[in-house]
Figure (cartoon, helix red, strand yellow):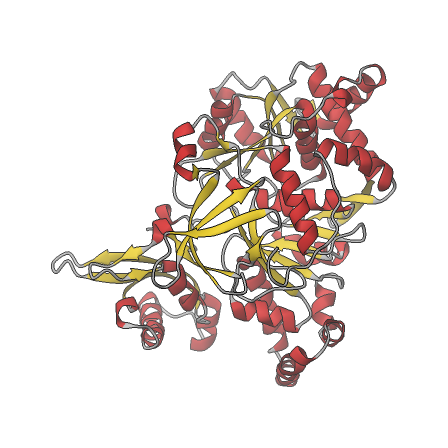
Length: 561
């Protein structure tokens, strides 16, 4: 037990099948989902109905002969996606969540690699499905979740209900908590997709941990915005709500974000820094639109730290109203969040709790607590998880190693890659961090991204990027190491995406490309004055488009150099 750790009770479950059977009794008429009907309209679905639907889809799949088959699901965050996931996860087979943004080649690769027999999808992606159908014969069934094409989802649901009247085979399945049940393909930011194998034990461990660091109950509502195929949203949003008896509501798209969040009225939301920074910018832009409100807003932010959270929420009621009026916590992951952004939200009465993890660790391994957190920190060891630093240097920086029930079974059909990252039960993350005496970890960079100069100096690109991104005229950046062709001397290069709106505001017009470059160069000179000589940025590349990113908004470094 870590210093300052708070002991909390948590609900004991064996597996998610048992959890759902209990939910049907405990939370029978409570709202499990706010199912999107389009145009900011939602239908309440109870735990009783949800459980019946999961059992029906599971039974239908078994009746068609797909027990233990690999079954894919691809689409927007939706009720049908969640029913499909849980039906397969709880006994029908192995669920393979697929990123809807992938192209036909990438989807086909995942389907072939895992030998998917059934693919659930949405009509929005029917063109991709047509392309896949032309190129393979191993997928036997296609189930559209929101249209009358092929085997329609609700037709399958009705067939499953009929099967359940005389056949309880699906209900009778006993879950092996150590058996592969989820296969997540992740290429992260650096290379070829690998299949991460997860089981019930992995995800049950996550539920125990989440319940001990954040207060969740049947009164909580999560707003699902991040791609649900990714383990961060599916675990911290979807599964965590089902475990706590809370509700899950779905964002209908970024254009509908502002309307949806007011309708759903969430208490908690899993986010990535880009979302929070966007909200922060909008809030401050509105506050600064008039001189009087600008001054008042600054005064409130100044006095907020001495006030209670309850009082802060009243003072910043317009901010809270725009977010539905009930938001308590943002759970931030994927990459580091700006300390300023985090502190500003806290002043306005909303906690930003940063965590750390990887798909391979289900995902959380480090996390800030609702009752004990640090701005800019990854948090402390997640309950039930061991973390240590390996090969620590003179500055206290080492590679994060993780051990616990949250660590994956391994990479699918890739023993060599598995053995490279799991040694003596420890998962080698490839991420570098330092740890303070109070047990809080701080990220310093990615081992693969580390720049080592010829003089032996270590430079972490992520640290420089954080400094660059604090500049109001820089939207995002990527730092790389390079060398002069003639002198072979090391130098640091920064790829910059300007904040076009703010630069346009400063100029009074949109500047030319040459003016834009000179403007950014002057800003870099200001930044360089605060950096040690070996970290100074010698060359810049100004981009007119954002970097290509993963669906969790991490920059794909290997594709953007």
